[in-house]
Image (cartoon, rainbow, N blue to C red):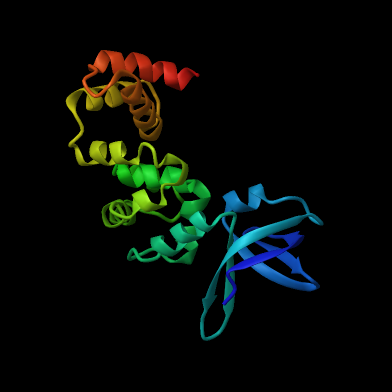
Length: 205
């Protein structure tokens, strides 16, 4: 089973690249996000690989990190999510954004991905909420607070501050991250006005 490939980009398509590894060209399917981050033809790169073996074909899926590959695997445990939909989700949301959306129970954010309807988005945020913290990546510092907000058990000052910031046009992830930073600065007893002020300062920095 192939877990990683290092080679030279030898061509690209709509959802795949050819990776030349010592003279052997591997066709690797990637999300739009991964494709956009790859170097130009003729340049070296490495990808974490997930191998799917079927009766009629073997497909390789490539990711720019092990974290993204782990999300690809996890998403397919949800009914209605196959490889194509999982790639579409990861092409729309980074691993950190996806973890935050699930923690916040923000099914609308997940449903932004092509091919993901409201029912599938609801299943994703419901079934994966306990697994999101382990795969939160660079959002790990605020994932606990986001889960409290998503479950409606965060303090009223926090809920009010997040609501105020989202009403100003910030996403749930941006608002909760800013309020989390404000809480660290002002302390757990801070009122909503303080959290909003510090949160706005955080968002503008």
